[in-house]
Amino acid sequence: MSTKLTTWENEGWVGVRHREILRAIVAELKARKARTKFVAAGPGTEARTLCQLANKTAKTVAACSIVPDIQLDMPAAMALPGVQLQGNKQKIFYRGIREVKAQDLEPRPSTEHMLENVKRHIKQTRGRVITDEDIWNSLQHKDFLPRTAQFLWRSMHNAHRVGHYWTHIPECQERAICQECGETEDLKHILTTCSSPGAELIWSAAEKLWREKEPEWPEISIETILGCGLVDLRDESGKKKRGPERMYRILISESAYTIWMLRNDRVISRAGSPINEAVIGRVPKHA
Figure 1 (spheres, rainbow, N blue to C red):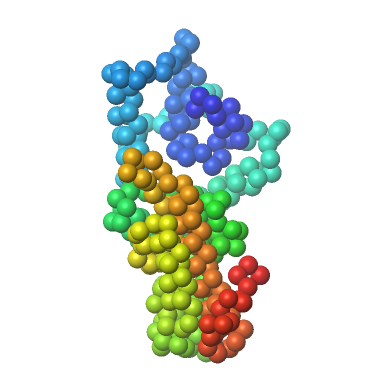
Figure 2 (figure 1 turned 90 degrees about the vertical axis):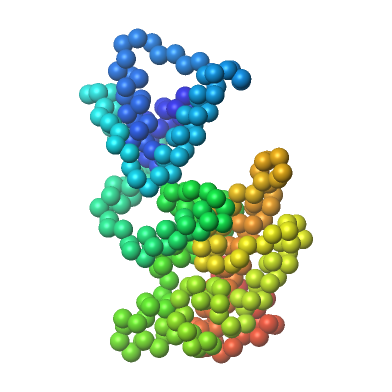
């Protein structure tokens, strides 16, 4: 708030996390008639300890699925409404419009189910409590190529035309079944368990490459793939290992997207004909 408040207000608080609480705090401060002064708490002081406790408590509450009962009424004329027309970029207006429209949309049950699975998986495997917003933000990580990011986003929404999508369309029910395995061809099956050449070979190569740098390779699941942007690797001193984290995000996401493209090439372009290993390396990933 001490460095970004002017930008946030000019942009109408578009895209700002916990903006309802932040706007209420700003309005209360502006309503004060006396001047408000903030002092940095020095290391080792009681004030510093209290600040660290407050920070920890705030993170815990922010990650909680139960919304606390907090009074967010703002003094009249103390909260600047809307987006400033002058000086803002088109993307700010676009995001603002999308946020307004999103308020009227009903949540997709399949999306909610996937989000809960990813959150549960991250908590069980990494001991971290994350929010839906954390997941959506992770899917836009700069380490993901655009097509890969789009694939992950659609996967989180279960928006690919595979599996049960075809069971409700007359004369297309057979498309829901994997021609190689005879099982429902949902995204989980395509990326992790399908016996068609591609998935096992690619994940094996990815694991081999990863173990050249790091000792532990994750168990590959749909939750591992969709949560790869949330990876948090640290050394013995607790310092983040940014190089391995970037490698992890790229390796998991690109492997999954390559398997997806191989599946499309086999099912659509080759009408179900098996793909041999020599062809796998020639399938375009970002066509």
